[in-house]
Length: 197
Image (cartoon, helix red, strand yellow):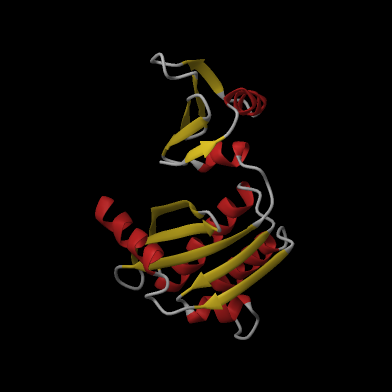
């Protein structure tokens, strides 16, 4: 549950401008409550607490833009192809910015890896970061995105094009292959998505 240190009145104006629905707080300590997309916010004296299925819907409005973020991504399928899930984590110098996971239907392991990268990049863009350092344990995805390996499968080529479209929206980007233990949290999120589904 993200907690943002900010002026609640400025935050309220930003959320109103973004189209959020706003209501009074439920207790004496709550200044206001807001809902935008799949996220809810509760304001206190100098903090806004964000909850919901997609906290990024509100956090991206309230967070100051710019800066660098590390994106860890992972995807997996049970069977190849089979039921698949993705997980991603955004980490800044302040710690975990946000993380997420979801089931994505039936697909291959490699396509799930690409879907995790796409989703993580979409969220990094929503948050307004202008530099992204990507870490993943899929050597295939990393080398295809870097142009070191060809993507012969049309579906993989399509996903690589989508990744490059998203990367073009960042001033600086890099992508590095890391061992699974370095990518542990994203891997855990994939497994949690399978357990929750």
